[in-house]
Image 1 (cartoon, one colour):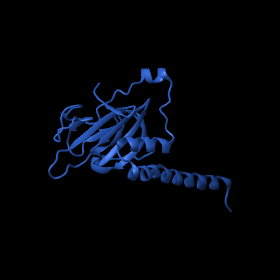
Image 2 (spheres, one colour):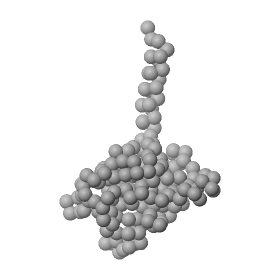
Image 3 (cartoon, rainbow, N blue to C red):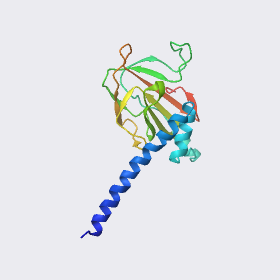
Image 4 (cartoon, rainbow, N blue to C red):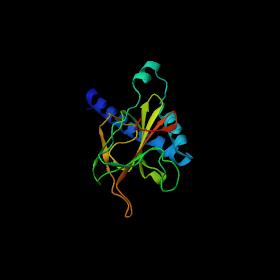
Length: 182
């Protein structure tokens, strides 16, 4: 005979399983139909019910000052010319394969997975109209997770045969890339 406590455990397990499935659905829905990162982020924020509405004082005293995501050498800065001749929208840091990668800011994981030419990509909603993008890490977090600033989120991915082990960091405020070092 089932006891009420047993039903509570079953219900909790079912809700947890449903939550895990729901957390992955926005990425599956938004990813293929997004024309670019701006559209992907907007779709994910809508799907998760995330809003940038916050008290002005809260945002004024909490600008997203970023912690370094990985130890290494900066090889490309914001606005510097890439090998394709366009200005970089973020910072590229060379590190050792397997080096730990930390969250540059506290926030809600909107996306964690492979996306187009970015490879493994993390999109973090840092609140107050700021999103942090991080590429080049083998991620240990999933969409729907809440992460702490400087909390471990993965390791530097092994580079392609002809590449360097790098992590790309981009900060967006109100959808526009800004210098993550300012």
